[in-house]
Length: 223
Image (cartoon, rainbow, N blue to C red):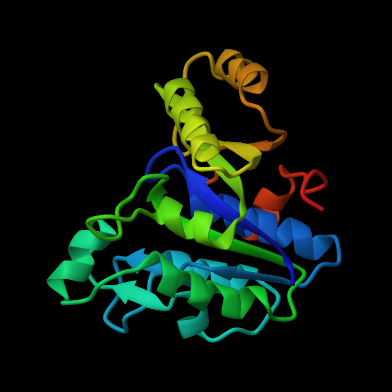
């Protein structure tokens, strides 16, 4: 089975997909066959496809069908459990894990499972996307959105990951908008306090391409 990691964020809109695409490109540049899964995506176009899942599909090397990459595509761009309820669907961590394992057991050497929003996003009244990561027993890559409040959000997310019995395998500092005040000081504080290697610090890249972001990322701690 491939080397697989679960990608989470300190919040929604912190750049999980951009970083995931950069990591896929960096792995491909290192000669690895890559794939990704966005098991749940809320917010789809008229064809029932999600922009983030399409970006992952374009960044990976393996020719997977869209339905394999994003098996649960929900129309409204709202919390997944609410979007699912509006469509009369029920999300379950165990079933989502089975869908992910189909890709994980394929030919790719390097696989990312990208969550939605942050670590504790609900998928039903009793489960969150964290339960999916636990079900799969994956190491976690945390994307930290470098903006005011990031230290608190990052430390709380890292603590939650550990309490759920999983390893924070690595983290990425991503700048989702204009450079925050005291960026380097915040970055150094996170370096000191987070118990995992930093894969890279990604600047704001409007209109980014996966290959561009890969230049800022070092996957050596993962492989």
